[in-house]
Image 1 (cartoon, rainbow, N blue to C red):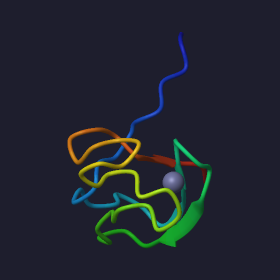
Image 2 (tube, helix red, strand yellow):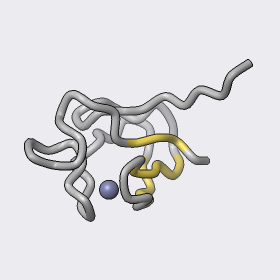
Image 3 (cartoon, rainbow, N blue to C red):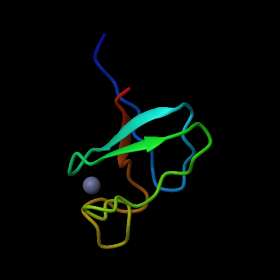
Length: 63
Ligand SMILES: [Zn+2]
């Protein structure tokens, strides 16, 4: 089975506690279930004009 990582967009809600990594720059954030994903504070992924836009996945769960 091919590996598949769910990518979360800015404004989506974390489903579980853990570390989430920006797919663009690798920045890691600790989130709790129910937290809302934000624009990456390092590379601005998930923002208008960022390396990924607001409609693209930015964060992946890494554990
Ligand atoms: Zn980033």
